[in-house]
Image 1: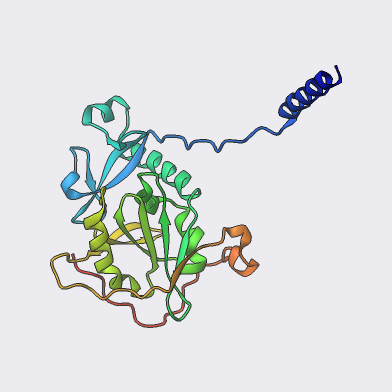
Image 2: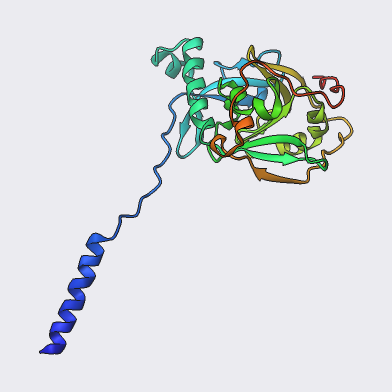
Length: 255
């Protein structure tokens, strides 16, 4: 009899423990964005595609995030049925890009001298390249790279950010060409300047020329989120500042 009581009490204690144990919190799935700006090689242009400013090889294509396909381009009929014009589309796509940007943990790579060589933004989401349109991009990284940036986007899911004041992005050309060639979903081998005035193509890497020199990178580390940074860095500057020049920037890559 005593043995049965002990077994019953043990089972009851187990049930009570299960009932009082904290529930496992599951990380919520990201909201699938219905309107995004897909940055694509010109070879993938659709009837709705528009070139990025001054670009010859990179176009903006209205698209939606798809849980199976990654991105699905809008047809002309679908775009018209949504009642959008181009400005409305870009406003919604820019908002989606900003929502994505603030979820990405930046990675910083330093050169042998310990100075920031570039910052990398990468995610499994298929429209990372569109974060170049976000108005939050410069405020987030101006303390590290200055107020004029250069963005390289070899594929849909990767963006490299450099300071426009220095010419290091020029030496990254062969890597961008190689990554673009190897990518399942390539984006661009052109370089884009990002400023408060907008996003403009400043040239393209020649994938038929001799290999460009490779940038020597010591390592990559996650960039601390703003709350973890020292006050002098975490607090945005009150007036525009530029990163001091270490050397004269190289001439823009030619298309």
